[in-house]
Amino acid sequence: MKTTKNMKKTLLIGSVALLTLVTAACGNSNNANKGSADGEKVTLNMMHPWTSPNVDNEVYKARIAAFEKLHPEITIKQDGVAAAQYKTKLRTLAAANNLSDINVVWPGADLEPLVAGNLLMPIDSEMANWSSILSTEALAGFNQGGKQYAIPTKQTFVDIIYYNKEMFAKVGYDTFPETYDQFIDAIKKLKDSGITPISLGNKEQWPLQSSYLSAIQERFVGSDFLAKVMNKEAKFTDPEYVKALGVIEELSKLKAFNTDANNMDSVQGQDYFIQGKAAMHISSSTVDSRIRITNEEGNKFGIALFPSVTGGLGDAKKSSGVAQYGIAISSDLDEKQKAAALEFMKFFVNEDLYKELISKGVVVPAKVDVPADASEYLKEMIALTSNGTSPVFDSIIPTQVTSVMQNGLQAITVGRMTPEQLAKDVQAALDGMK
Image 1 (cartoon, rainbow, N blue to C red):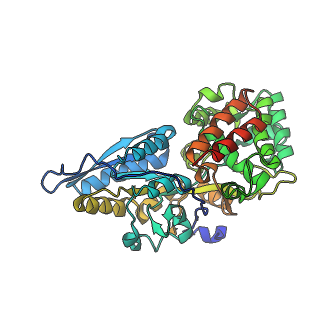
Image 2 (cartoon, rainbow, N blue to C red):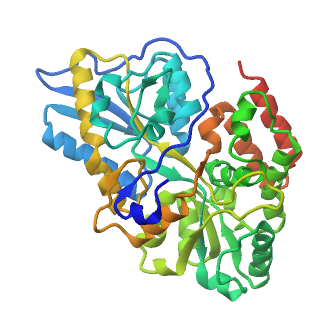
Image 3 (cartoon, rainbow, N blue to C red):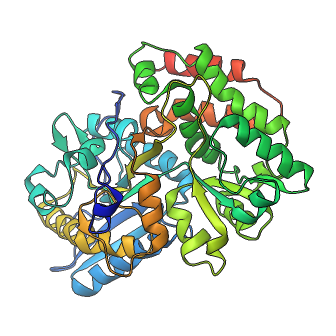
């Protein structure tokens, strides 16, 4: 990774090396647009998860509109699906051989079945458009069998702890706790002073899995544990991993979360924190714009990573991250549609997109000059996340198994499951996959 000094000039955040699982998916997609072009005009369906008010989502939708203005002969018909339901719909459409013409895809385990089913078009012949700004590491998660299938738009670090400096100072912490024991001590003191320690919106279930567990497992078992699980060299039932799951149980028993955590969605969880109702919120680097960059009170919020764990096998300086929102093209397009889709991809994902995202405070996986108007908060985020990247749980583990983990983590928060039982259930789900 580059030093903070060099990052003032360029930005290079590489994606983690992602392990994939071969699963079954078959057949060719059935596109409603085929043969429906009117004269020289082409309509392409595009499915994406850009429905929430995150700043990068607005950038993406604005670029679609700009493309249509520049190319009136091409219409991009958008199908926006809420992030919590997006992967399920993508998987359902893939099983029915009915993907959209252009799709937002995730790397690694989520990409593998789409490639195995020959549902996506390799774009190796077009890679000269991105080779100067995207490293091999940044593209790795969307590369299968030596072929490139998608281009990422952003680098997401999922485990950023946003904390209220004033609230922490009130209980004796002028800086964020460096160890897990100090972290728990701060939570107890915050509770005693009448402050909700952590704002959690887990209605969609992914926050505890993606933002919390990804960070916790790094501290307890290290960056290579999930790869070992997939290679059958380790199990979720291993004692150290059960201890990692036990953190969620401990936080729940301490009543660290707001009481309506499982009825509140992720955006509401952000708002709860921004409104000063909790001392911490753990989420992705993307929401830094809402919490600090565009917030008049942004200065009172700091950022940190999950603290070190005594005896833990991981690195407390690492942040869990992934190159995300890959733009991929269906393999079942005629020549005119294919040409139009490639024209769109080259316009949509380019240096201008990355610079615009940076100017909005979003970390990107590309080597581009940082705009002069880039936020000081972004530079702080880059420094925080520049000490190594650890894997995100659902970028390695198949979706079906991830769902079991998400359900179980939510059950732990209400005392309906133990870490030991969840570990057994998740391992059984993985063992039962064909």
